[in-house]
Amino acid sequence: MPKSENIICVWQKCVLHADMDAFFASVEQLDDPTLRGRPILVGGEGGRGVVAAASYEARKFGCHSAMPMALALAKCPHAAVRAPRFDRYSEISQQFMNILRDQSPLVEPISVDEAFVDVTGSQLLLGSGPTIARAIRARVYGELKLTVSVGVATSKFVAKIASDLHKPNGLTIISSEQTRDILAPLAISNMWGVGPKTLPKFINAGIHTFGDLQNLSEEQARARLGESGAQWRQFALGIDEREVITEHDAKSVGQEETFDRNIGDMTLLRAVLQEQCDRVALRLRASAGYAKCVTLKVRLANFDTFSRQQTLNPCTDSTKTIWQAADALLAAWRMESALPLRLIGVSVERIDRMRAEVQPELFPDVAAEVQRKLDSITDAVARKYGPEALHRGVARADSRRNKRDATNDGPRPEAG
Image (cartoon, rainbow, N blue to C red; front, side):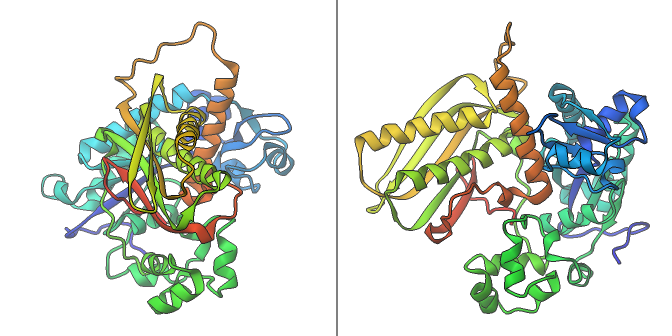
């Protein structure tokens, strides 16, 4: 089992994954003491409401984020339901991220309540990775009165796995020597990015645990899972060379995709673009940023590359607004050219939320508030199942060859 106490070591590379426990629900219990110890569901009520967060008391009854609220209440009829309070969650999130940045400047938020922290360069001043992790947990509880689970490892992927092993309020340390043995017995559903839509692919290939994937050769993994099989196998072995990328100062957030074949079908192109907008907006919100400009990038079969931009006024982190701008740019491009595309991508010029000039509305837009709640559900799904869970219902796997997740115009592989 992974050790959790009394380890003093300085690794060549040390990455933490800090994940607030049942964040939305815990904030509700913090602000309303009568809710403490009770099952809490945060989300929309009504026939189409969805759970954005469930307290650990509610999880004992089988409730979880991304579940229809009606089903959650059927499982736990006595649960208290609270509407999301996004301004409050954002306030706490900023305090949490500031605590992390006090330990290292290399902080990569991946949601409002979790982040990677590279403390490799902090260890000489602040102590070993486990020591820094304990300091983070103590400060979060002391200053915010909330708990956080922290995983300590030599890579982002293993640190993420570690933080999930002993929730809530856990500290799990996995050294490089322990990694393969600890990962081997874990169900493949525990791999970040393997959600309900992806899991059957693994099961049908006879892969039920990390160990099953570890035991395959690279060629066998590709044969069973496609071209991405080699990357999945690397993750199962605990091999992850991705760096912690500080999006706090990023000037742009984007994603692009190169196809196996030239694509002229607008339905398919729009589906790809919409999924890209989902992911870009997710990362934008996680980094506490707003978009002030949307850029569409297209590449033709002859490798001629073109881009179109649209300024957003006011700045926004809304998935719908970013998608509408990107879709309009694609439609305008199609009016100019009917040639099929080899690549399509979208990026946003990012500005820190604190510097964004967003004027409060005198009469708030009800539709915008509904969209904001939908975005929170999307974020909840991504937190639970990983970004891969954000695929929309369009069959297009055969059209995909290579995917790039770009910050500051640089390549950044997917989390899995």
